[in-house]
Image (cartoon, helix red, strand yellow):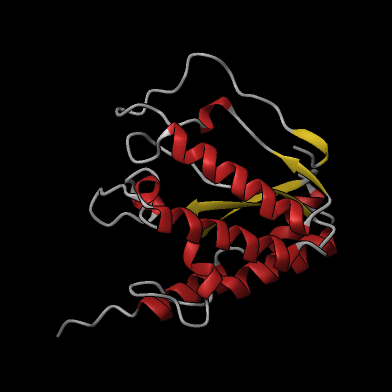
Length: 197
């Protein structure tokens, strides 16, 4: 007799056991000062996420911020999966290799709304170190034009909630050509200062 997969129970077990408070203690006691936490866009609708997603990741992120505060660890929130998938890979929530994020104004606006939700929710935590607006966008689904519009809008919603921020950027965050070759030059640097444009 085959058992039916229960995504909610599997996800909850993962969130409750994969990274726990003792891990934050271990990280801190070993001199690591920051963690990067990947989240999916559906976290903003955690109570009633769209199918096929399940809720519960928001509580896991809340816990991470509580533990980060307790152990003196900075948190980088990484929007790892955007609606429509920004690169067609499974880790960006593509189920079939499709990549439609940058082709839809609605997808981009929904992503801005997610960043707004996250920065508003965590702006008062002193351990909010940075918000990565999108992970590994890839052309042709993420065009330079769609990314420029999104980065400006995302920057503005972060600025609305956070007065001083670190804005991590890498040259690799530009859309890569199909095939995924990275640019030949090295990484960029983080900037710290009042948000102005």
